[in-house]
Length: 422
Image 1 (cartoon, helix red, strand yellow):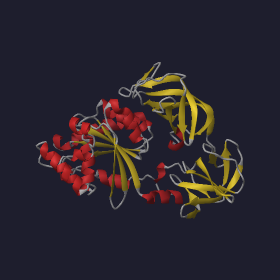
Image 2: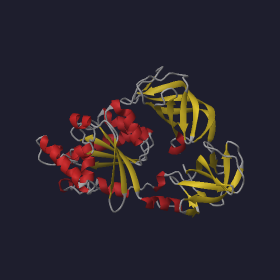
Image 3: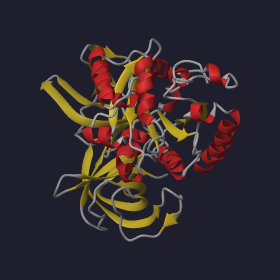
Image 4: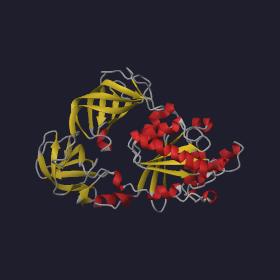
């Protein structure tokens, strides 16, 4: 699909892809990321030397690539991923931020955290085991979080003699499952993270596979259309008043495009004005788009403060103090219905309560279960009521104005991450 606007072209030229990885224990996530970093020269020499020493202590000869990302001592000892490990690397074509997320069910909240801002999700499947319950669970969570591009990397093909028949069987099964959960885009690639087949370099052992390597796909996947550039949303973060002649409203463009001279509407007041200038540190811009942080000045004196929102007239978000949402419960203390929490949505922080639970999703079977409370790592559809109205869009339409977190007012802990339902 060709790029249609200057904002799309500019965003594409930024060349940054955020992606996340998920898989069952021993599927080889850490080895895969280690291979990507190692083969793309994304590991420093001193880090490589430390990994060599650790590998030798364990009695190994080759470098244990999994140690590149298994940063916690508990991870190295248990051979599993526990925390969300963020890694950065770059190629001449694109820059990457990786969120290596845990695959075990007890760390669902960590996976939700790491995947929440991803453009692409990599789901690893062990070729020996095929599609297992956790493979489906990871796909469901990735789709729930609105990740637009999914890659199923069928790993350890070397242990199955690089069999095309094994690959095609797993591919067909997961593609059927992907359609059932509404996955937008699904690419399936056979790899061996340990041997390097189809990760960075083409595999000589799988000449029957004619698609791209994993890195080639990461470098070329089209992400400019992932942005919502139709619905302008500008949550005000602060008001800048350095002198009597300057009054600007600072914040980050959540979605849409704003240009100098555009008509804008203020929520909640409904007052309308036009954009006088779009200011950044280096001067003025003619337009701004997500995720740019800018200061907008208006041609009229308008009463605006943190938590208010600027939008285009006639293209406005929903305004309500009641809505339905999917949430992931992130603490060991169970959810208490009608207990007072704070909800952090865009730049607003208001009091809120969960008034009802429609159902909890069993993320292993995808069945909907009736429950009275939620426990750690549960995912459920709930009803929420806030003290003041929020300005929001459905998460499926706008990830930035459709997400929120719930905070315990007593402990200040984040207890849930949520996505507003259409």
